[in-house]
Image 1 (cartoon, rainbow, N blue to C red):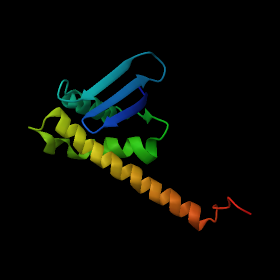
Image 2 (image 1 turned 120 degrees about the vertical axis):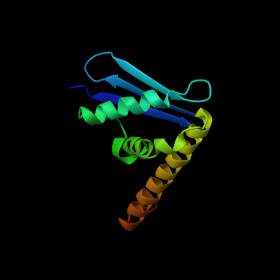
Image 3 (image 1 turned 90 degrees about the horizontal axis):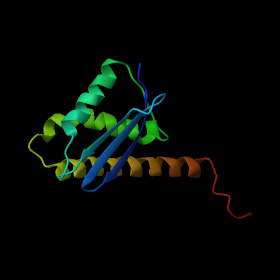
Length: 120
């Protein structure tokens, strides 16, 4: 079974997913951009991971990476005919929503738990 340490880098016109096998040096890199659009091979890789029950291991997996992965898997079929930059922008906008939602939730938890004790 292959489990992968992974990370995503997302810009407004560029998306990159990097996966490294957790025991070997096998590495997979997927770029979505106008100069190199590997969406199809990325989706094939993700489906293989699902079918083989392979895990993705990341620093902020549940709060970010896994949500982006699920979004891509759930929506890629709507992106046919779009350029790599257009697809990257769609992913980027979703990523911003995830990040801002998490910031709001974290801020509310801090406020409700009374952790704003900067001054005595």
